[in-house]
Image (cartoon, rainbow, N blue to C red; front, side):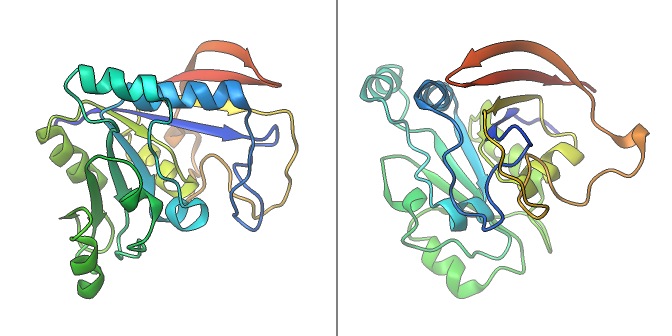
Length: 226
């Protein structure tokens, strides 16, 4: 089944945490990394997040730079990439920033167990795609957006969505900005949570493509090996 190139971008603390134990939005990176992320968004066809990120951080997932938005428009694209929320139960608030801020198309991917009333309300703000019975079928979702012309998907979290994509071998590259702070907390989310692999033969291996100092931390660029 065909799918776009998929890459995860995330910022984490030196001890691997992407937020605190309270799962509230935490500023981990600095201005240089924010600009790098904005450039990545501008070069992507779609940005994908999980419902947990929407509820915790309420991101708009828009391209912040006016120049980059103008460049996208000049290239015949929308100001912002397609924004995709993976939300099995259709819990996305209708007033969420991702549905209301910035021009552009949105997709809410739900499962068949989604609440019908919520699906109806969300359908006024975004295209609602039913993919899967109990959980969103990510392979099907990626195929459906491929059919819509999406060739490059940027994943901005969270830890559960990252696990689902990686464990299903649906990720091609990973960009991790590692900051100069320690967050701690055994229940604080990491880059990848989920069930976790139990056998070494199942574990996903990466190839390091580059290391770059940014702000007070370091950017690691990884390729996911087959």
